[in-house]
Image 1 (tube, one colour):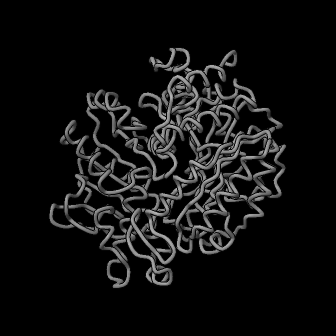
Image 2: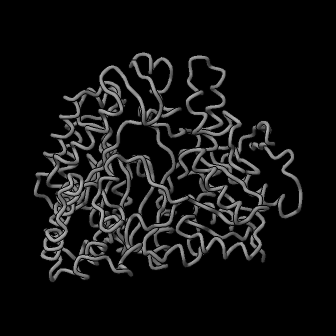
Image 3: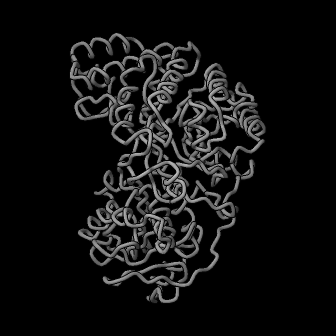
Length: 535
């Protein structure tokens, strides 16, 4: 069977985190536990291959958007190949072109802006100039929503022209067909079928095309997918999906909250929670394919449904040999049986706390409070579950004093001697289109001007926010930023105290590197003592 399409799930670009770029570097590589071990074994040098790299970590799991698309298309009779990260798999992509695929599908779940999409299309066009390119996903649909606001005189659609599609016609990505939909899987199937049959896209609904002069949009129809269609048949996927020993998976879709800084497109009609039987079926399948770690990519695990303990009990009772992590809200965990959650294989939870200042949480419409956060984090760590927290510095109303309260909160948590490991990621506020704070009335109320990473309001500006991120990074001593690429097996081999000391040691040297005080010999000796007899 000939190849209908190649799917590209991601380009491989970094996030907007303010703390991630400050992490410790070893000879051009992020100082993951496996990199540090290699550095020690080779007397202060990195000598590839690095044992345990790109395996058994949360970050080594293939992207969920690519897995879902590949599975959906296969279930609908199409033969597809999956590129998880284009920059890392360029040679694989080149080899796939020899199979003369009919189309290329670009998912924009992890593509942040028009420039990044244009760069990707330029690279693939250089390798496959005549291959039809279809793009869809969040960037495409968000761009369409922004276009719909262009006739609102007080809504700023001028600033986003360089970041979003459809708002301008300068240096557009070379895309043949945009699928403009919250989901769009059925439209994509129709488009691939037309390519197969040699038919034009013509009256295909929920699409856009660019003729070099302007965009044309087709008629709109309701193309929602049914929850049962969203189940993944992991047994039908290629072995490459499971090579790292970890996968990403969805237990639910959507989020009912409207945090004021968040620009994710929300559609209550598309929210769903997978039935527990369906979810357990998928978990058993990936375990049978050799997976030991699952990263659930829900915005809020199972939408905060009240069946968390039921799910954990089913998982624990079946003794399925898998460990997992997820993003979850603190209030969901407040009344959960955390010991049961740990026995069910939950190794880590991520929580978007954003601030530990009560007024800032109110400004952000977080519907939470610092006391709840402190209580839940203590209980999570006491149960032996690692806790990774996310904070935002600089949202309107932020002051030096509110930042101080958040930093003191983190210092109070990192000083606790509990079983789990505590980590964090700190982001400067991003003034993003389609977020509630971007609305004209909200920005006027806050005195907020600017765009994305460059902004100012009555109490802070973006430069001050970045400065606070750096100062917090330097001040924290007994924890560190999240390193999602750490080989989990190797961390576990260090033991409880060894893991905690490794986190402290790594962060100590990251701070020295920032200050120009890094002593390579001192770092080698410290890590050698830490790893001695443990790996």
